[in-house]
Image (cartoon, rainbow, N blue to C red; front, side, top):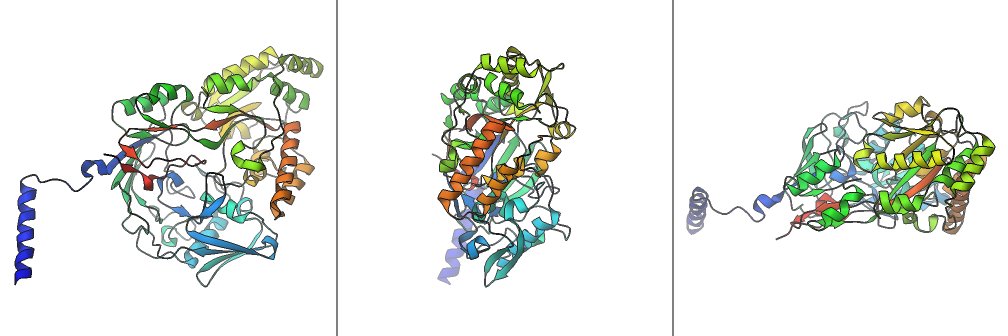
Length: 513
C-alpha cells in the first residue's frame, strides 16, 4: 500500500508541476540543433545511399582516421589470407538497425550484393558509375561465415579495408530495399540519427535513433538546412537562424577571417584538392606542349594565398599531402609565363578561345568564378585566348566534349589513392572515356594494377610515387591547391570535429552551457 501511495503522490506532483509550467528536462530547447550546408545531404530514394555519410543515418564497415588509415566502424577488425585474395571482417556485437532488427553477417552480405546488382549507378555523393570493381576488386564471392563476413577475390587486393571505408561499405537493413535495389522507403541504418523528414533542396530533419548501440546523441533533433549561397549562409548564422555551417565549402575562404571574430571556426586539412582537368581528346590540349604551357602559366602560390585566402596550399604532386608517404614528395611546380609563351609559339595558338568550365554549384562553395577569371587571364598572357563557361550540368557538357579545361574539387571517401587513379585516369575508366580526358598510358595502367596487389607497403608506396611522376609529366589533370575545409559554429555547440574527408560527426555534437 505504501508503495502504491508513493507512486500516486509522485504522479500527482508531476501533474501539478506540469500545470504550473515546471522546468523542462535537462537540455530543454538546446536539444534541437539547426545547421546549414551548401548542398543537400539527402539525395533521396533513387540514390544508392539516400543520405550522405555526414548525417550519421547509416554507418560503414570501415572508416578512416585523420591519417587516412582504415579503422573499425561496424566491423571491429579484419584479417587477410592468400596474399590478399581472402578478407574476413568481424562485426560489432549488439548493433541494431533503426527499425530494431539486429545487424548480422547476412545483412552485410545482402548490402554488398545489392551494390553489385545496381552498379553502375550515379550518386550525388559517391558515384557507382565506375562499377564495384573499383571498390572490391575482382570479387568472386562474399559470404557470411559464423557471424563474420568473408570476401573471396579472384585477384589479390592489398588494401581492401581502405577501399571499403565509407560509402563502399554502407550498411542498411535489407528491409530498406526492394528486390531491384531501390529504396522501399526511408533509409534504415545503424547510426545515431534517423531521417524523419526531407524537403528536397531545402531541409532534412533528423531524430535521435532509440536503437543506437552507442552513447545516445545529445540532441533529440537536428535540422539541416540547404543554403547554396555562401553569403546567405553566413547571414543566417549571424541572424541566429542556424547554429553552424558544415560540409564541403561551408565558408568561402574570404569569409573565414570576418566570421572568426564572432564564432568558432574549425579548420583542418582535408583530402579536397582543386584540380584542373584537360580535355586532351581534341585540340588544343591533345598537344602535350600546350598542356605544359597552361601548367607553367598558372601562379598557384597567388591563387592559394589570395583567392583562397590562405585556406589552401599550392598544389604540386597529384596526391594531397594528407596521404602521407603515399604522396610523392619530389614534384615542384614552376611558374614560368615566359616559357609558357615559348611553348605556345612553338605549338601554335588555337584559332578559338579555350573553354574553361566550372560548375554553378561549386561557385557557392569556392571562389571559382574569380579563380577561373585569373586562369583565363594567365592563359591569354601566355598566348592562349580563353573564355569561362559556368554550367549547372557539367557532366553533360563534358560528355559532349564541349570544354577544354574543367576546374573542380575532388577528394576520396576513404584512404585509398587507387580510387583517384582507377576511377579518373585509367585508360578504360568511365570518367576518363566518357568525359573526354583522352588519357591513354599503358605504363600508368600497369603501375596502378601492380600497386593494387602489392602487399609490401614500401613497394606499394614506390609504385604510387612512380605513378605520380608519370602524371606530372603527362598532365591529364593538374593539382592547383590542397584545400583546408573551414566550418563554423556558435559557442553553444560542443564536440565539433571534422575528419580529413570533411565529415562532421553529428553524433558527437552536444550543447555547451
